[in-house]
Image 1: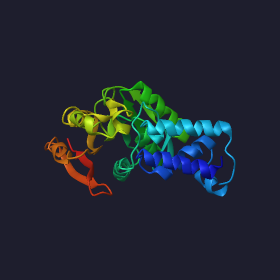
Image 2 (image 1 turned 45 degrees about the vertical axis):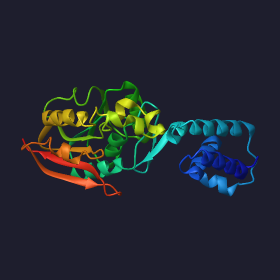
Image 3 (image 1 turned 90 degrees about the vertical axis):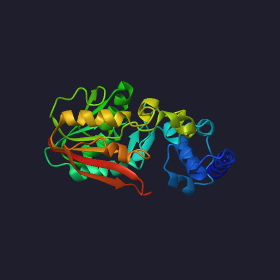
Image 4 (image 1 turned 120 degrees about the vertical axis):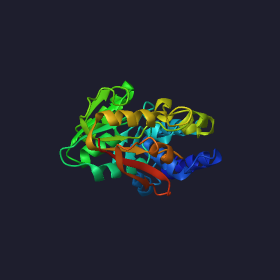
Length: 276
């Protein structure tokens, strides 16, 4: 069995099961079994596959056919140009969340204290810490998620203080300048319609924001009003059709409210400055 033949067989299996991006997925899984980069496949197409590698590759393909996301199989996901470890304890970082990072970086000033609420894998907190020389804190209610986030911070050399608490409950009043969060915002009623990769594998606590998907936004705005210093910023990722309800949660104490869209033209990030 050569690498080329193994790749073609993997593609065929994935195509027959209607798995998205079958060629890319087969390449990634075969490379993971080989512990090599993708270029290696095309530089050595006639190389014989070792038995142990074939066993690993076959297991990875089976897991993917069962619905397990590729990122959970390989244990990693790229975000903002860096590789992050991911497990089933954390949401897989999405490219759309990079818009939230960009909006945050544009508003962070030297000396600011930044908190990432609901950090999950730590992708946002670690990225901000590496891109800006500021104090970064990150919270999560899941201690398992915090272990993953701490692992990412160590491996990437980021200085982040991780705290176990619900939202910003362990943060003192008027102690931070920027609150950034990608909260759970999928309506619970949408659960049956989600892709099985999401519904059956990603942590529900990081996905669902109550029946309407807005529950965490309500609490997050309240927490931001407590912990932000005057003229501090709140930045949140938006779910589908959530922009107007979230905007409506901001009273007269909020100003400079803006919404950034993602590459698909959908409202993705809401930013607001707390003046009082």
